[in-house]
Length: 431
Image (cartoon, rainbow, N blue to C red; front, side, top):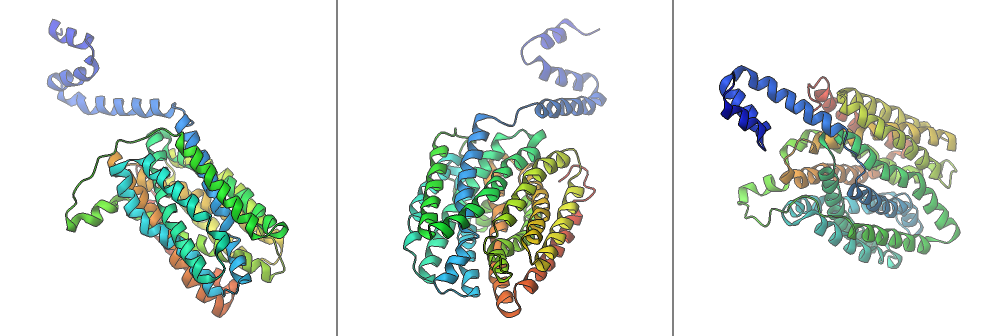
């Protein structure tokens, strides 16, 4: 029979923790099973926690407004550059300047987010972006637009890293991938609406009105960010030895998932940069339906993939994603009608909707809280690098061989992404 002192310990505050210590001293063989049951209880408890907290909802609103400002520009700027005398090659440089600027800022932003605080960096980035979007209406040639896009990318690198980290802070582990999927829906909603609206604006009112709309959306994102509560305690400035600088800026455990995302982003970069010009060659002036179909499919795929992945099927989710993007890119290459492009958009939406939240979860879910900024930055660096380098390289391919061959060329990086994905299949804990 247990002694009175033991019974007293179990009844006092914190007795549950002491209960495990007492059991370990009396019956060491029971410790592992007790720990396992406690972990299962924690996961079960977290699975019932609501994702839609006030902070998460506001972060989604800010991200939606931010993506609307971005998606209004991404598909329409290539048309604007051609109008002011830019070539296919210069379109590639302009689109790459944005992602390269973001890529340069990501590791710095990741460290600042961890050391100085998430909200401060988010607000600073949004305020800077608001000022820079005011400059678009004054860009009259390729060099001016190149500078503006690079500066805009720098601010986006700050904002995206900070918001992504705050979302990771706000989600329960047991519903992490599902939550990331819902957060990603902000991009899908924006993609469903904004490109079509952007093409409509330039068709009815011109690019000056479009640039004004971009400023307004950025201002709305800034307004939302001011009401978001801080997440994560900043660690304060720390001196990092020279040999460990890159270790501090990048998160090693995020590299495998980020490697897959790099190759997937090469494919996505070709779509957002050249799909409008490819469609124009087929006599289609407004490719907005492609983006709407793409976004609708992502809207459906993201939460489904999140729940499926959280239930232990990340390998299957990644396999389906790769196959869907493959079919989608082949369809893009052969499409000559609005219906064909819309079908391609829907299939690609399914693929990217499965890919992105799953890979982001693999990159950041199991990282310590004080390294989430670095992990998020590492993941988004892969996206920026893939889009930036891919757009430049594929711009040369398009100029030399045409858009159809260029889109078929993207099957090479997609195959490399699928090869790396094989390492995730059959993983015991989806990581």
